[in-house]
Length: 92
Image (cartoon, rainbow, N blue to C red; front, top):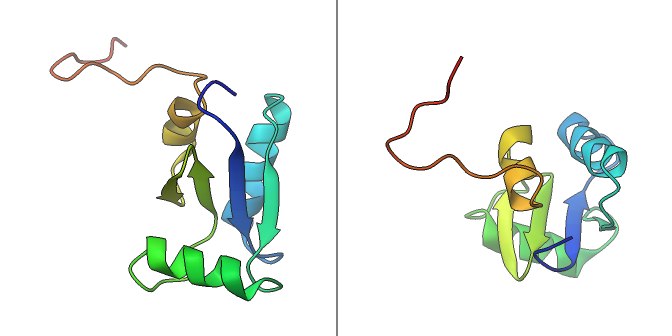
């Protein structure tokens, strides 16, 4: 991981959490999973990062929090894809 350690805050029942973890695993990205239903401190951190919402997955990358990013955004966050330049349209 180019941007530092990844923590992924999840719940066992969240399909989006499963999707994000599977994506990271399939691309060989190391991460630490924290179940917010078993860790009150983690739940408080997630709620603070997401305007009081228990949004999962929430990823913490290099000290910044990202609430339930789309797979394309997740790919950019972990350095697998470059962010498109502003004003440049993607080619078909």
